[in-house]
Length: 306
Image (tube, rainbow, N blue to C red):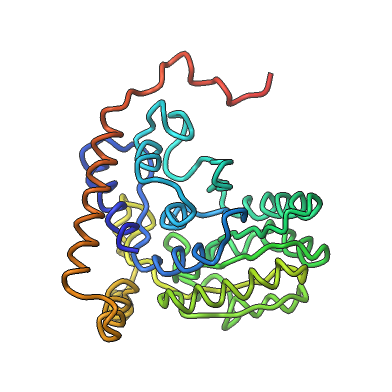
């Protein structure tokens, strides 16, 4: 979770220096959701992450160097400089996405889940969607298909209180988004998305259920987006009192307290962790900044079919 947050902070610095073009997104407040859920996957499972799930990429085996190359649009990046942020695929690690618009990932995740089921891979597909994205047609259609075909899909709704600037009170009237699951005949559960162990345990159960052929599960992870939609957004529309309340539920700070109380984390170990993470990020930045951009004449290669 610390690597996830510090990596994004490094991206923000590069953005302000004019070295990152396009979007730069913060996952502050969402770290436990991305990390806890991804740790429940096995190596042969598939990951369809969103832009606030950079940590899930790291858990699945992606390197800070590759993600930094991606943000800086270098020729050696996974997307070969044609796109930034998390818009890439790594077939070796079975990471696909994110795809914009985000809701379009769910039908594709269904397709991968169906293909995997037909191949008898015994694999599960983990996909995420935001509270706003949970209201579009793709969400409904995909869950109709996934439920009736008992596809090995686990869908996590990251309810972080705002769809860009639209608060959840203006998005839906149900108390819990997980209550929609009953309409598809599948399990639905709402959890505290700032508790990394709870996220892991809940996702693990859903993954085991999917792997056993029992079909999809809908998990609503309740968090708070502690920064704007992207770095350009000053989030003036978010009540300061709401941020103050959620600051007390910071997933990293609270888990650190828990580990210290259980005598798992010492000051020495904490210092070692932060030192190692700083070295990883500094290495990723230095490496990526010095890599070349793609040649202009290559811009359209691999984008359109012959």
